[in-house]
Length: 514
Image (tube, rainbow, N blue to C red; front, side, top):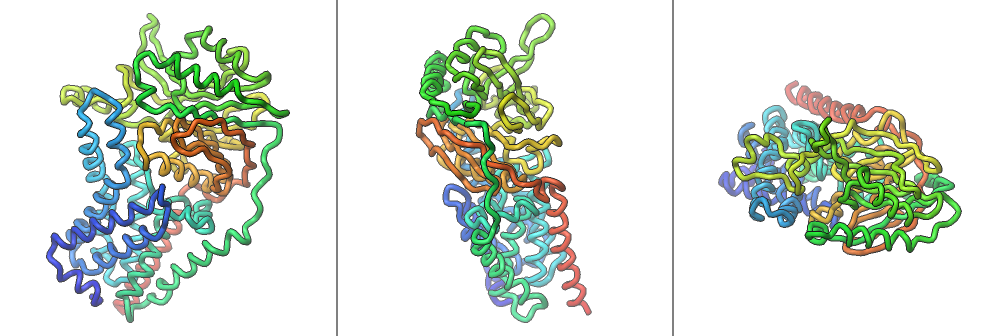
């Protein structure tokens, strides 16, 4: 055991758990809006030093779980804000939800830490194995029980575009493993003296930093914008309290129409984009409403707007709803519809309703009809508009699940982040940037209160409207890059990266035994 690890191991168990929780809190501050990798590396280094002093898998699990609990609770604090916009449950239940979700998801870093302590014996091998195990846990977190992939640990690498560019190969999960590998550089520098592989591990962070600083100077120029189309992103700055106020539908529609009518189109096809759930009225069932909206559009224009569709049985009774995006032309005709496929548990539907309702639990979105999922990613093709994929709100946070087999030219994500306070919107925006890098596709994002913007295929923000601002943002559609390795093979190279870390761990362990 190295001296720093020995000193940490000598602390009482409660003190070690508190330090692990502190490490988790520090790491969570690196996410947007700060978007700085340094706190992630600092928190990861402290956790690895604590793990180097652990002698049993049980102790490792406790340290990893304490780290995860604090890390997720701070990173998911915006969930509690959402409870302030509903009356079915007490507002304090929001913090119960945050802590409960964090306690459950902390099992993944807990298991990663337990495996690390059980099977690795040196600071170097523990850094390697923990990075691989964390990546596996992050994939499980985004997959099991419908998944919750919010805030991958590597997201703050967006601060260094040259490092973030590796998401095109190893994905956001691979960036998380790289962050812990860099934290392992520091942990090995502090406490791995004399160990095999130490020099190579210590060199990882300087090499990654050099890549981050040099790549922006030598990377290829971005593809040119797509010709023949103009985008107009409409952010009306309608907060959630206004949206939920009684009889507000007409007022909200009037505001969107006024902003739309202020648009002066140029020579290309004008595409006006309103955010998720911009219209609460039923577009498909109200032709007069469609005619009013269509009359506000420029000639040859197209409106892409979030809205709701109701599914009915043979008698006409409503049975379910869909969270949808509609394409509406100037004649008031619906030209296409996309239904959100990855719904939010507890938000758009109530799991185990038969059990939850008697306990006083309800979903966050008002209404008695649960939402029904659509079939999944689609590429929409409309006259005068390059083919595009749609992701509604939460769907954009899931890597390798945002693009149909029929690859689009760009991605549109509409969201309503007015629920989520100060930290949720910038974190959501950051994850849209990661999807752009992974897929090599530009992402256009529109919300009612911010952050709306245009992201190129390298994840760089070309234009944006900040939070709590009303504006119409004119933009071109950035060009797409060739399909990236991640776009072709998904998490395949992420798996290869993890297996290489595992192989290095086994090789060093074998040398140690010899």
